[in-house]
Length: 195
Image (tube, helix red, strand yellow):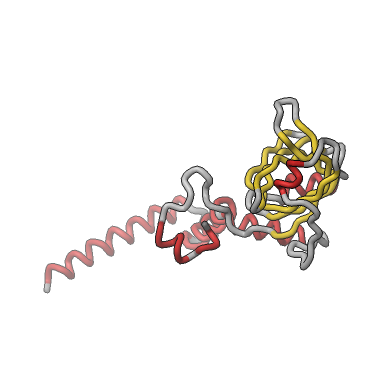
């Protein structure tokens, strides 16, 4: 019984000497616990995807945007929009599967149950506030509705030039990676919404 108490005293001495060394490094008016909690709160805000998306959601709501509208008018499914002639006005809705910002234009892949289409958002065709909201607040996984015209890019990709867009649902968690998918089979069965 005497030996464990010696080990305990050794650990207490080591902890006390570490605390004294850390106290010398920290400013005298900030305790080590306060300094550590401030750092971990800052790191959590930078690295936590959910908190970043919640912040974006709160910014949208405070700007007067309904992030979860009750109704949406969708005139075309993605497959129907892809079959439409170039220059035809289409209105589709789906989930943003990828988003690529390139200054004054942004490309996004919109997917519904029938397929995937590339959408081009230009700063010239959208109003400045709408384009800024798209770039700053829309993430991969969000559900939006897009009204625009069918066209083909210089590289031959069938696309929609967006004239207007509406947020239908803000995703608070990222969707699983497309390449690897959801590897945990048990999680796939228990949480069907992730698959």
